[in-house]
Length: 570
Image: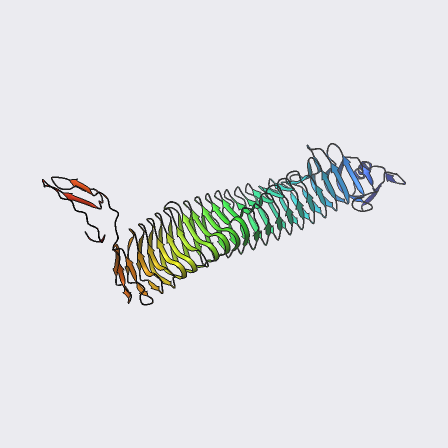
């Protein structure tokens, strides 16, 4: 049977005036004990041994146990506390500590103004249920923890920490105002489910140093840094969780690779999903809404796998930069003020079955020759430019549709774009444009209803197009201007009478062109310049290309002539 002890500061028949006296009596008898405590303020340090239940006789909040220095409660055995308020101010100790066995805090309030509120030491088990922890942290070190329907407020560092192999479950609780993290998992395992975490100074929920973290059905808001963070080879999952008003919705880095499903990252002040420094991660059926900078960001060796996700509102949709990688399948990107898909600076982006609507730029690439974008079954609608490739970047498009915009596909500087089985319709400027030294290759390309041209080459751009069709292009099916060049092989140009099929500067090769429209060859007027003359009396030795030059040898007198005309003439 359980022995019953009564504690009252006023004394009375068979009552103890302090809790410590009742504990000593219970320990001396060596039996399970119930200690009922009358309302009052008890300035004591409680050391509880054996099987003991401490309960406030008149309910939660009626009993305060405190000390200005040292621990307030040390548990050894099977201990439960019901309805007490335990308060301490010593930064160097644990206000409540479980040293051996198990400890349950039920409808209990713990105040730790300067130190740890609750500490579950190795090989112990601690349960907090319907309780409140103010100011201090709750730490599980190599122990087992269960937290249900609790509130953690204004922790000076981490509200809850699981470390050194601990296993902790947090359910239906609220964590608010932590100076550092709401929940930190380090070389341990934790699950947080159905919880609210708000107002943290650093990442609201974080796993590091090979920690394992599961986040389920949580709401995270108003954090000064990351909503959720996985680092240092940590693992875990995030399911059906919403992060609102964080600097970054979720961050993975340094080898960490969670699986994130069915979650929403809304109104993030910088990025929604941020994968960098060799971070990994799989993201499925997620939404990023209104990210102020970039919705999905992979950089510095990051390599996410993103499937069936939606990006809506904000600035940039998906950005893969600075040696990042990423594979994106069945994503929807819509209503952005900037670029939907971006691949820059030595990065690699693969996009499959994507839909991009109402974004200023569809895809933009820029960087060295290691910068690549591979798109297959992608739809661009309502844009200024669907695809822009610059620098030395390389873009491959297969089964890509661009509809309703200014320019379909553009390539410039020294970039390269290869297009297969794709369509551009209802553009105001052109279907495809090559400028600078850009190179554009297309097979089975269709351009319909351009208010400008189907193809345009300018500056020193190069266009190599075969088995393609250009219909109802108001200015011309194809235009080769400036020093641009290229070839059309087995192509068709259709349109109203009087529209030229091709405006040719003499540098285009037209092979098996099918059209009833005129091919207009324009004489390109070159800039007058002093020609280069090489006098070599035994014969020329030329080690590189030479243009606009005249040569003579074995002559005593040389007469120079420079004519203007078609550049195609020798």
